[in-house]
Length: 445
Image (tube, rainbow, N blue to C red; front, side):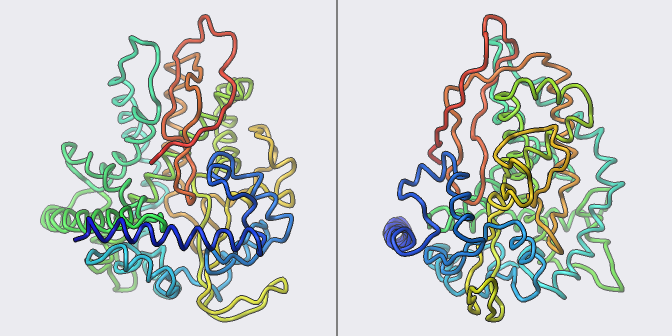
């Protein structure tokens, strides 16, 4: 039955989105081009154009508003009058329910701390944070270094080239999370597949991907149920064992909360780190003079990673729901409307960063909200930074010369996220006078 229903539903949703996009284009101010490739190939001119019209603008396509100013984005991320609970937006819930059918969807049927407000969010974050103490994350460095070395050792370098995304950036974060959870090595590949399917479930224009995301949620929950029972009997130093034992004022995580937030940690940790590694290396390959600066010191490398997070953020948008009607900047926000907070546009706001459209790892002050802001600041950002730093140190140590070999970058098509799907590099620039010019292309996904 679903083989018949899902294509019909997809067509209907695409028609609705097609109509609403044109309403925004002709009567609103938030759509600057009707060519879908323009926003996927290079979204930043569009973001800049929208911000210049106003930091908060009505969006019919999103049944709410788009926020592009750095000041306004950070204020909404702190504002208790807006919610992270997507169940408060009937428009989104209807779309997800129609697409998912009889499968449960993360953050709708199975809430995580990301999709909750205080006091529930406060309670969950305190408990989950016990598994992300700074000293524990830093203690993972030798393990991550070994995992990176193992992945690099598996690469066949006879051809003098390899795909960084396929060989390193994509598998590593899923393996690290699986290792942290005490998952046997033979089962780690499941985590990469589940992560990609769960991420695909965020594409509201594709019902088939929403359903696959729901199926991945249920499959992973079943797996975690068995794993959790094993850890209760034989606890170790892994993350799941720590979360089982985590306690705050006599309170502990329920089984459902444990499973939901482990799934959240996989998706958030995997996709952000994968794209951070890929986007940063892509930028350095096309700015070879800055690649040399990044190689010179740990401080320069850290700056390169932060500037990459600002310039090409892995997460382009985050959403909030208006809890109570209010007026902000003369805009009348109604209860239940969606606020699409553009991280990418905020990072390139001239009010936050001087010459924001220039990639410069020597920038003295790098301001960004790529890991969020306020109470929902990304819990795993220290882990993402640690993994990325280790990856680049190992790449720099092994390959004194790296050059971009791809003809065109193939950016993923999910507008909520940004990252190259493949990144072909050569390990020697012998016979090559300069890197290939930057061309932009979108991968079908």
